[in-house]
Image 1 (cartoon, rainbow, N blue to C red):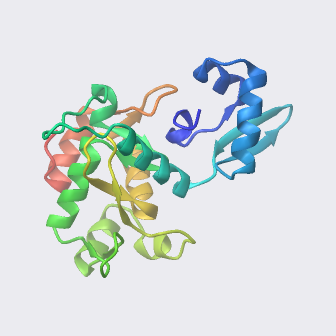
Image 2: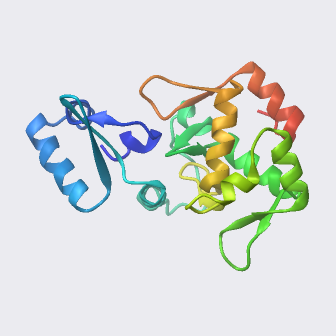
Length: 208
């Protein structure tokens, strides 16, 4: 149920029961426990109760648990992630997968972001501020939010970082708005469009 909510959407207990293949009563018991542990939050709308992840920190912990659960003892890592999820998917409110990892690497190479001290956090460079502003992303507004601005979020399928935080969420919003990617129905998977492939190549030098 938790991983189903990793796409950032809210669902009813009935929908989550179907996903988990348990009875509605069992799902309700688990959801109440998850709510008590502050892993999910509930919103009441009319007669329905909708559940979603408590926040980005929970999503990040789940992504980390995915890495531990899928850790291989073999010398070479071979991803077992389904192809449609491996290329591009949501990691709560930002993008994950090979596309997101490539984007992360490119914005670092282009000098748009740089590490902040000895942490996994990033800050924008002057070039990054100009470049992201040119794409329609307001860096000042993002940095004023009460959340981490940008950090390296270790990718579940690639075992390398993609861009998390407010900046990562803004990049996903931009990609959806410009239809570089589209959401798949009731799935974390994102489909990269032909427009998106051209834009990613032209804007970032990322070839998909």
